[in-house]
Image: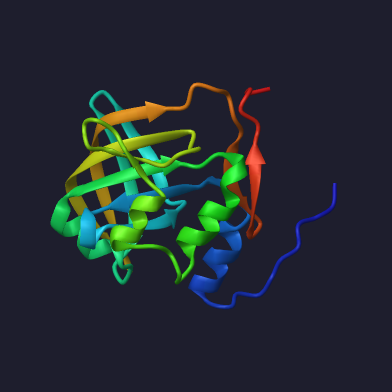
Length: 172
């Protein structure tokens, strides 16, 4: 077995970025706000915290456009992207991401008023319960109010080694 290579430390942020790019993560789009305040962004720092009661955690940089909207509305949507949605992830990670009324062209709304991203594996409607500081980010602990899943089996979009790829949905 080859011995692992050792790189010189470049600084904590650069080192952590280099380490984390080796760890595959699921890709989501977070949405929040309504009408003129509507925003969305690509997020891969998202996890399930509890099944009973249903809770999730998402990390958002304090300087992100979505941060004050989430803080004010206390509501957010999380949309788990399918493997074919790399272009959606790139759009909502870019500076040109749609916002305000223009975001309506990308999201559907359920009869209950929850955002759903067409083509996504699933969408969660959540209410923020607590906010925790985490360096240059805040961690939003949210209660899941409503979940919508796609009927068909699809692969998930994954971010790994600085690029989008897929993860097998069949578990084999």
